[in-house]
Length: 412
Image (cartoon, rainbow, N blue to C red):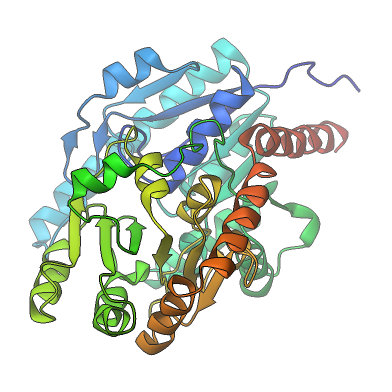
């Protein structure tokens, strides 16, 4: 049996950088650290809006690895209650998109003879698992981030499609032990078909020290500062953090909160801030560029994002932001939900709380802001832990799993 000396994997996903997101960051870091052995097939369109992604051409030109873009990888999301005609048009669009995707995959496999295929968007592209296995004699795996496993599918048909894709895959990469447990309990997967590759951090990038100029730019002064970063969606718990803030300020005078990110929950959070009378003490930055992010983390005394599991099962798959904060020496308060216990070592690199309990959130933040010695000890432990979580090691672990699947496929 002859194995490829330098195996190459084609990773297929619906959307990609420069659109911001945890999954996109993971795939980018893996590809950069695998030096040509991971190629991305994706779209230059944002399916949530149907518009072309701004800056994708420049991003691809500057990337150190190959990115293949199609106009679309899935139909545009329909808002509200769509009419029959809208649903019919979207379905027709979906058929054509699927045809184009399969055509491009066939061409890529014929021209470049990839040794494995990885599906990076389970719910939208899971149908490709069985199809690719019938077309090519290479292993097909799924990269699962957590929320797509835990969240309740929107109908029975979608649930069956998800289960079918998971069952058919040669292997599944997950980002947390939480996701691994879900796969085993919900889909009866054997542990040997799952590889847990927790998210990593680019320690060279996230090596900033405390930046007084960032505080000056934000207008928050030198008082206690808590920073939160993430897409503005319900599961992140920004609303609970805001509701806890008056209690925090009552115990820690001058405490300021900065929230960076954009998303559909933004207007509601702005209203909540006004309703709580916190307009001068809770600052919404909107989307922050990649250059500023390390300095923003480093300017904080504490990072906080009290994530929670929503009623439909939507939850945080890992929580990359906690690891990024740790890399610059900023300890964290996070929710005891989803895969976050893999990102925060409770009591060592930060504190885990019930993301639905505003008193517990406030007490954890107050406790750390008032105890400089404990916070500094956690900061050192957080940074030491982050140093062991580099993307180069994560990339090697991912490719070792791919190589194992290739070997098993050839032996079968």
